View (cartoon, rainbow, N blue to C red):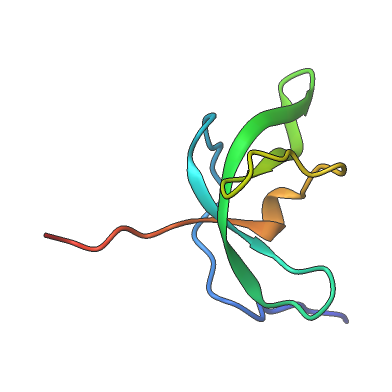
Length: 79
C-alpha cells in the first residue's frame, strides 16, 4: 500500500481570487518563493485545474499555469 504525506505545511485546498498574494513552489528545488499574485484561474467546467500567476515585481504572468498544490497564500503579519 502506498501512502503519501505532505512534505510542506498546507492549508486545505481553496480557490484564490485574482490579485491574491501567494507563494509559489519552485519546480527546481521545492522551496517556496514569494512575490507573486494570482492572475487568473485555469478551470474546466467547475473544476479548478490551476492558476495563472503574476510576478509582482514586473507584472509578468508566468508562461505555464501552476497547480493548486504549488500555490500557498501569503500570511500577513498581525498588527
